[in-house]
Length: 86
Image 1: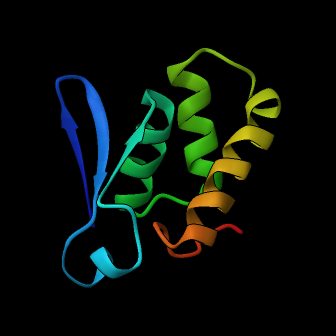
Image 2: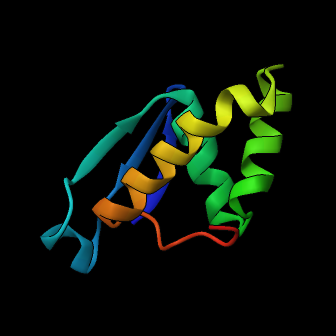
């Protein structure tokens, strides 16, 4: 699985064994792409929430539910392993 940015769009691309489990390509919006990039860097959930709040100039408490929901969905589907801080 790899995260690529092509023409300004984030794409999750399945390869190898992942082709049997996932969509070949999944398009993410900018926020989803940023979250996945931070997760790939090994950041925990709270770090992601903090950095996204700064990036989009929003209150952490306002964005926490949406980010947690996205991370939970990516973990359930299998695109992410459970992140630290969960």
